Amino acid sequence: MFAFYSPMTTEGFFDESSEQSRIKAAIVSKYFWAWAKVVLPTVKERRIKIAYIDLFAGPGRYKDNSLSTPLLVLSSAIQDPDMRQYLTTLFNDANVDHASTLRREIEALPGIDQLTHKPRVETEEVGERIVDMFRKWSGVPTLFFVDPWGYKGLSLGLINSVLKNWGCDCIFFFNYNRINAGLNNPAVKQHMDVLFGSERANALRAKLGKLLPGERETTIVEELTQALKDLGAQYVLPFCFKNDGGIRTSHHLIFATKHPRGYGIMKEIMAKFSSEEHQGVPSFEYCPASSIHPLLFELNRPLTDLEGLLLRDFNGKSLTMKDVFDLHNIGRPYIRRNYSDVLLSMEERKIIQASPSSSERRKGTFADRVLIVFPKH
Image (cartoon, rainbow, N blue to C red; front, side, top):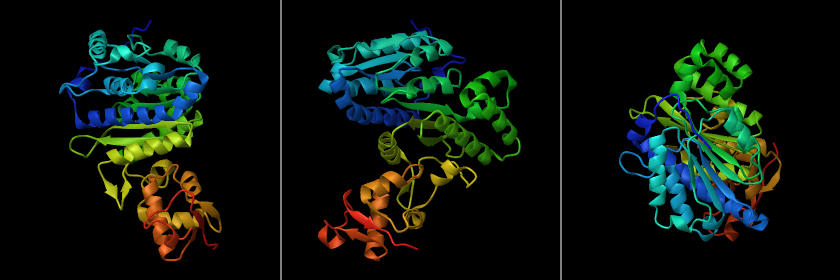
């Protein structure tokens, strides 16, 4: 059984029930529901389970009594007959009092007895033993949420132990301030090495001393996303949280998946929770970016760039709207509405040809099946 250890108290985290914490919990719980609906048909066909794992679960509520992620996930599952039958959950927290409180909160949820698989609440040290356990975890599609207060327990090995399997996605909270300080602290070198990989961490340390604060942030987040891609998580999406003053970054919520459909779903969810839009393009993260950081640079492109990108990337090609979106949106901030708006404008100005044409479609729409012919330059 688990008995988690934490290098620092998480009391402050749950006492400070900030708007950021509620947004984080909402993003995770909304993605859980959307993800579950995608994998459930296969789960039912194969007669297997669907899993939600939270290794740093907390007591279930913030200080202002709002629900944190475990209770939001379970509450939504109770409402659905399929989820009641197939969902299995594992919650863990290093703090024994938090774990006890979470058990009581779960037991008090209306309808909790309707779940076929009783939620498990454990206390175990997040380390190599846990990684080894999850390496043997297979055949169960899992949404894996890792939300450490600091950085101990967060490692590439832990993320990969679950992400490697079919239907498994990972969301984790990346405490930028602590990791930024930790990279140059010899006392926590081992923790940084398991998070980035020792070779990448050493290269990162060599770079950071020459960089300004804003450049440090984009470099650190970029290196982490590239490390995840090296594990096979082809689709990585960061969402940045600023402090209350809106000046400094405090955390990033990082989403990693092997499937473009999961990426598209999470992009739409994160877009709705973005505090700003620029020309209708949501700001998934607030880090200043430049072309030396390709992922973050692409995620900061304004809508005015999209027309030129489409003409360049699909020069002389004919594709459906669905293919254009699926092939082009990965690694960029644009959501489907942005593509529809730009393509409608391009069609109106006769830059592209579309079939059926605008006169044959419902006004202002660009359905998935519409064929687009891009000019050859």
